[in-house]
Length: 117
Image 1 (cartoon, rainbow, N blue to C red):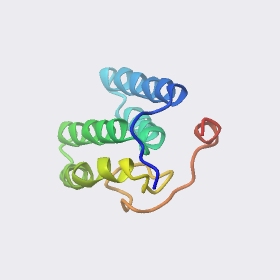
Image 2 (cartoon, rainbow, N blue to C red):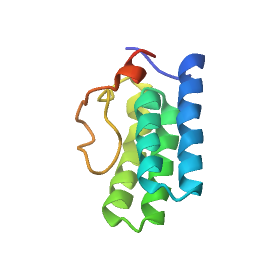
Image 3 (spheres, rainbow, N blue to C red):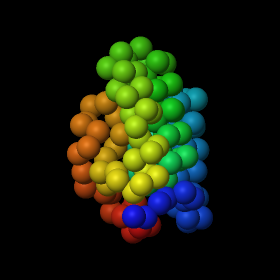
Image 4 (cartoon, one colour):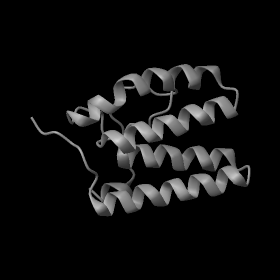
C-alpha cells in the first residue's frame, strides 16, 4: 500500500497558484470564479492529506460565507474522512470536492491539470 505524505514540488506550485487565484476572486467578489479555483485546488491536492484537508476547510468557510447549508454539511463530512483517504491513496481522482457531487465519484480531470500528473 502506498502512503501519501508530501505533495511533489511541481504540484504544490500549481496548488498554490489555484489558491492565489481563489483569494483574488474572493476578494473581488467573483464568487463563481473563486469556487472554480477551489475545485481545481482540490483536484490537484486531493491525493495529499494536508492539501486535501485544507481545500475542504476553505470550501467549508466558503459555504458559511455563502450561507449554503448543503455545502457546509457536505464539507464537514468530507473533512472527517478526506485526509485519511488521501494518506492511504484511496481518492476518486478528478472529484471537484464540492457537496454538489458525490464524494466517491471519479470525474474527468481538466487537461491542464492532467498534464501535471
